[in-house]
Amino acid sequence: MDKRIEKTKEKLRQALGELVRTESIDRISVSALCERAGINRTTFYKYYSVPADIQQEIIDENIADILQLMWQEENAWDIRDLILQTLKMVKKNRKLLEGGSHELTMRMTQQLVKNLRMPEVYQENELYFIAGGTAAVIDQWIKHDFDTRTAEDVADEIALYIKAVIA
Image 1 (cartoon, rainbow, N blue to C red):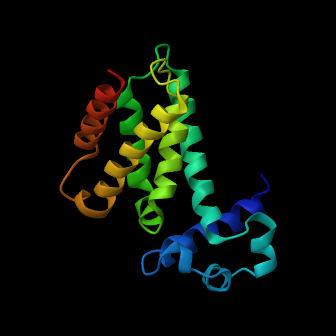
Image 2: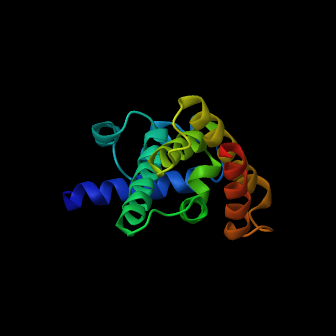
């Protein structure tokens, strides 16, 4: 990617991270974001439609990184490994996710669960159920338990939940 594009996108990401600390992502205007980032609206619209698109791009990149790591291993990761890597990604991007919604966490977990080598989860309804429960636990952790529970503890809980569902 062109260095200028990378710089512009990084400015937008930083500005969005600052703005979601005080306002829901749905309430952040393109004008406010561009002003904070020091870029014009036309430039913003070259890459995104709404500020939430930046958030989704970050999640997609992180998921791609997790999946790449996962498939590099000789043996497929177990559920806990995948969940733990996901929680580390969530921790890294916490401020952007706090301003998001359950729907964002749900899309993220659906995408990850779909890519996990789990022949037991082959129906869309099961996938949706597992992703929904996982997303709910992650949302709870982000909003209420982030400072009191470790990512490892939450990964253990979610892995037990998924294993119980597919048993």
